[in-house]
Amino acid sequence: MNIANATGDPAVGTALATHLVDVGLVVGTVTATAASATASAIEYPDSQKSEARRLADVLVQAPLLTPAVVPHITLVLGDADPSGLLASLQKFTGLPAPTCGP
Image (spheres, rainbow, N blue to C red):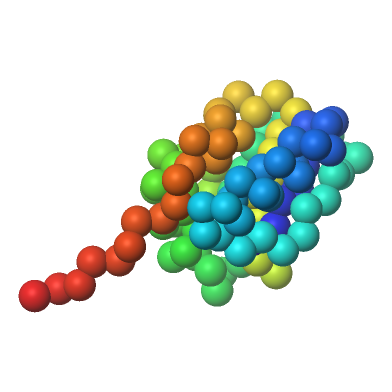
């Protein structure tokens, strides 16, 4: 996944990437965007819809799911972050292991 950091503080994106790697996720690029994004989002390409949904469900952030023209799931951190995505990600401890059927 990628991180697009519009918080105005580059350290936020870097610290978040480190945390997500530590809990077992693969983080590609972390960019600090000059474009203002007041709302956070979980953007995803059509090919990763189920993975994005799983992540959003675990974070209790399903309303933030946004189909987009992106190469990978992209966490957009808004400057105001009214949804609390950043706080949810900072508390994130990893995705639960898939369960096997009987």
